[in-house]
Image (cartoon, rainbow, N blue to C red):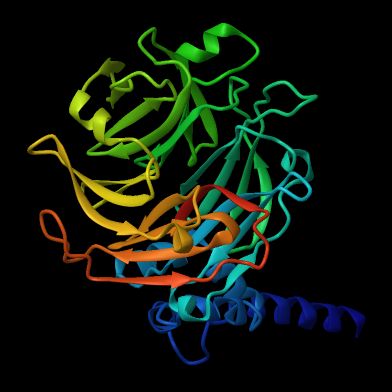
Length: 362
């Protein structure tokens, strides 16, 4: 009798593990239906069963939604709370922007909450925190990963080189940690490349990498880095990566003149937030090598210093206290004509300073 009960239990577990997502429907049809549920309800879907939870946390789920143009981009802001000098991270669902809700995500890994000069990048549905240093801590090589679907943090392969205050960009499924400061002076002329599929790093060096990197962007299959120096024009180098060689070279002085603040790329156009005198959004026109004004924004709304991120044709300008202005540039002409903008009030506290913003589509 005990043997029979044991066999029946094993059979039930086997059947449960191989049961269909939706009773009576093939799994591909079930996926087709479930994938159309808005992202804000995914947390509820994960409560239905283990199979649903595993599916919604999987790459298959995200890939299916991306393939069928169902992906929804949420905005993630890495901040520093000046009241306790700790890092924190918040997320905004743009579909709920009218309610103005930034929500806190799970506390960052304890080892990195006090660090400065960390890299912050995204690949697929994962956010990465890289390197950094502290008052009593030299540059470190640790890398932490936040899976936005599973809502969990984990530690991944460490960088080959300990770095802080370095350039960081993602391109074609890889993260590039460039220059910065570390335990040796050679760090400033090197970069490491992370492959998320294999969870491995490769190291490179090039004497042409500039020092004191302030910002980096990926555009047109290349990576651009900008120096913190006050020289006019600031130094900008272009990196072209191919399977056989990687080389840094100085290029595009015209672009350097127009790149004087946080920048984002929307439909192969570079938008820059100029905060030197008020708050002004400009666009660099590659064909003419000139920067043109898009719009001027009130500093009372944007609350500088601000960071920017793009999702689709929307640019999110996030300032102190997570005050947010959303500018739609979908029908912007050659010089002016912003289609629409929306503002989200800041928190009651100005203690939150935004370090970096990223967009993650699921």
